[in-house]
Image 1 (cartoon, rainbow, N blue to C red):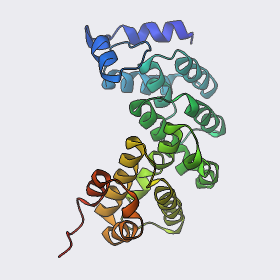
Image 2: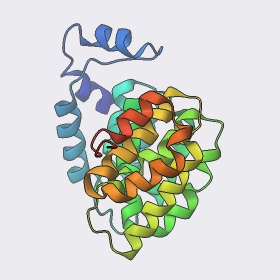
Image 3: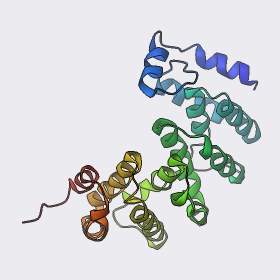
Amino acid sequence: MLIEDAIAMLQLHEVPGKAAKMRAHYKIERVYWGLTTPVLDDQARQWRQDLSLADRLQLAAELWESNAHEGRICAAKLLTQARIRPDDAAAWYLLKSWLADVDCAAICDHLCLAGHRRLSADVARIDEISAWPQSPHLWTRRAALAITLPWAKIRDPNSANLAICERALGWAAELADDPSKIIQHAVAEWIYELSRKSPERAQSFLDAHGHKLRNAARRDASRKLPRPA
C-alpha cells in the first residue's frame, strides 16, 4: 500500500476543527489530522488483517516518518497484537528505533503498548530495556516504566512475570529522584498500580524509596494504601 493512499484513507475521517484543538493541547509543532481514536483503531485493525507482515512493517515505518500525530499512533497500533507470525523480531526492532523520536505522552503510551506485546512474546527482551532508565532522553526513561506497567497489575505473578516486576521496581527506584515531573508521575503510576494488586510490595517500595519522590508523586503512589495510624 502506498503511504499516500493510506494517509488519504485516514483523512477521510477528519473531524472539523479537531486538528486545531489537538495542536493547542499538545503544543508540539507537527501535522495533526483531526482523527478520533476509534477511527485509528478500526483502520489499524483492518490493515493488520489485510496486509502481509512485510507490507505492514513498511506502512508502519512510513506512517511514523510522516511525523503526523495520528500517523505515529497508527504506526504503533499496526504492531499492537499478541502474536505476529512468523516472527516479530522486525517489529520489535522497529519499535525500538522509534523511541528516540518520541516527544509526548500519547505517542509514548501507544508505542509502549505495542512494545508490551512484543516484550510479552519474548520476555528475554527485558535485558534490552535495562539501559533505558539511564537515557538522557526523557521519553526513553519514561518508556522503561510504561512498557512494563502491565506487570504491576498482575495479582499473582509467576516466576517469569515476577522477575520482570522486580526489574521494573529497580528502575522505579533508580528514577524516583528524577527531577522531571513526567518521570515522577510515571514512577507514581507504577507503584499505584502495584498497590492495587500487591499493597505490601508497594508499601515496601515506598518505605525504601518514597523519600526520593516529590510530595505529589508520593501521594499519588500511595493513595490506595492504608494511611499510617
